[in-house]
Length: 111
Image 1: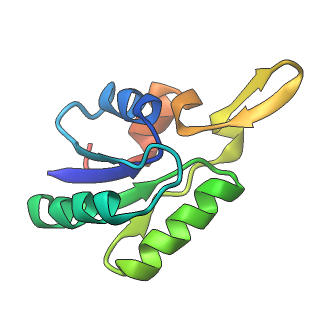
Image 2: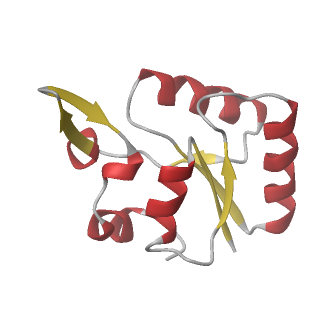
């Protein structure tokens, strides 16, 4: 089984649409406290591979770095910001939840 560490429920739902049997750790933002650490450690036991799948923005980069420093066996899946872009109120917003199913199928390992 493949595990993904994502920032929120919307990210999980998007990835689940193309990878329904994956295991998820939801950070609920960019928190990385005891509860999240326990969930990541559980995923490392349950899953063959665990990946960080955070948004292609500064907060996503920061939390991915913290996770990979703590757990060097976890790799990050880099998302192309152009493939994760959405326009809201004439501003760009970037997130895994905005990626197309086709892009995720091409990008995510374990599918």
